[in-house]
Length: 329
Image 1: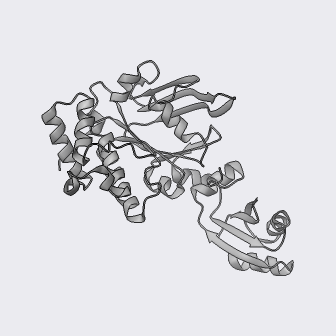
Image 2 (image 1 turned 30 degrees about the horizontal axis):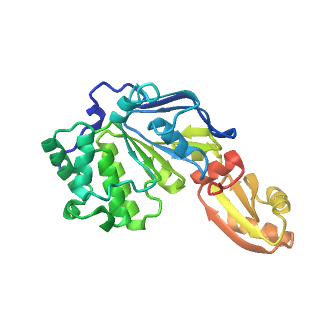
C-alpha cells in the first residue's frame, strides 16, 4: 500500500512544534487540580510518551489538547491552531484514539471509516477509497463487512486507529492504546504506531506502561499529580538516575534499617528508598552485587526473602523523582 506523508497532510503549514502548551492548567470544581502550569513542546514527526500513574493528569491533558476539556488556565496549540479559540479547526488537524471504545455499533467496520471521512468533508468516492486502503493497512480488510461488536479487542483498537487517521491529520493522540489487550494485539498496535510515525505522523502516546513508553517514544514526559516532572529521551532519563543496576530487596527487618545497613556495607550504593515493605537500591559500578547484598545481610543477621536485580527503567526514574512506585495512583 502507498504510504501517506502525514507531515504534509494538513491544508495549512504546520509549524514546529506540532503540539505546544504554555502554562496549561485544569482545576475542577472543589479545587481539584488535574493539570498545573504545563509547558510542553512536541516536535514534528516524533513520538512523545506521556507517562505517569493513574490519576496523574494525563487524560485531562489529552482532553484539553483535543478540545474535549476546556482549560482553566494557559494556552495550547495543535498543528499551530489554538485549541480553545478555534476548536473546530483544531479537530481537523488531530486524530484521537480514546481509552474507551467509541465505534458506532449501528455501522459495520468499513462504514465506520467512511462515515468518519464524510464527517470531515471527504467526498464519497474518496472516503470509500481511503477506507479500503486503511483497512488493508491495519489488517482488517477481511472483516470490512462485519459489525463492530463482532470484533476482538485488538481488532477494535486497530479500527479506532484507522478511524482517527482517516481524515489525514498531522497529529495523533493515543490514550492508553494497549490497555487490556493480549500480547499479540499489543504487538500489532505497536507495529502500527511505528509505521505511522515512519510516515511522518506526530504521535502523543499517553500510557502508564513504562515498557511501552520506553519502546515506542523518542522522548518521554513524566507527569505526576498534574505537574511535569521530567522530559527527555528514555536513555537520558535513565542515565540521570546515575546507576548501573537497580536492586530490590525484601527482608524480615524494617526497610529504613535495611537501607542504612546496605548504604554502609554494599559498594557503589547511590540511593536507597523504602517502597512499602521492600527496599530499592540504585548502585553504580561493576560489583558482585548479589554477593555483596547477601554478605551484608549475613553480617547483620538479616534474613532476605527476595533479591531482584534489574537494569534501570523508566519506573526507576519515576521513583527517583517522586519516592514512590509508578503503578501507585
